[in-house]
Length: 301
Image (cartoon, rainbow, N blue to C red; front, side):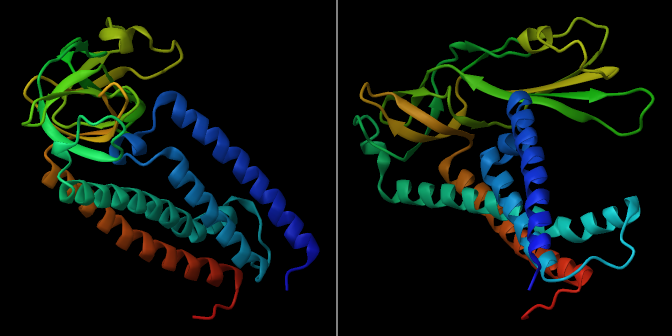
């Protein structure tokens, strides 16, 4: 059984990890979260799951002991390598569960034939596929007419061979009409996760005039010698699948706007969920074994 002082040290370590996690969360929220943009999983989901992985690793450590002579950067790095699969695996499982819930929602919506009830006020958790009828908004990077959009900004350096580094991501849109085959319904995407593909990409030198509202709002301390912008937009005629609920005015308040028809979106999310489930389970298992081996903690399996 772990001694009281070891529980105290464990609590202190968790406190510091929690502080860094909170700082990372707010940094991701301020500049956009690339994982959330690509998977639709809220930042809190996978960060909370990763924190639970840290707790699990700490409990394993409490019933073991540090290697003799532990100290220095090398030992700290070795500890990180042994624990990382457990933490990352927990985060991957959180994304897998979230994406799996979207698949379940799409399947249920299709079975319920929600096209016939989309205009009923108060209809909750529906999915509708249709074509964009109008493009009332203007995209923030290249100034294109669009109903909704996603964008990213990457930094490049002349003297560093590290490739492009993502600095900011974002998305947005304005209420637009979507024709699901039974007539147009108004979709409000302003609070939604938006997932679009087939974007336009362009590189600018840091000293050049930067495009759109994104470029005009760059921080003076952003760094980099080159900036690469990528922007995808949903223009008129584009097929979208929208998940959300209908408010009292008949507007479909979207929580997800996804590029493609229902079947394609279902396959995409199911594939992502399945792959991350397998990878997450394997990573968690490997992480538990590695952490236990590092601390000499006996396992029941």
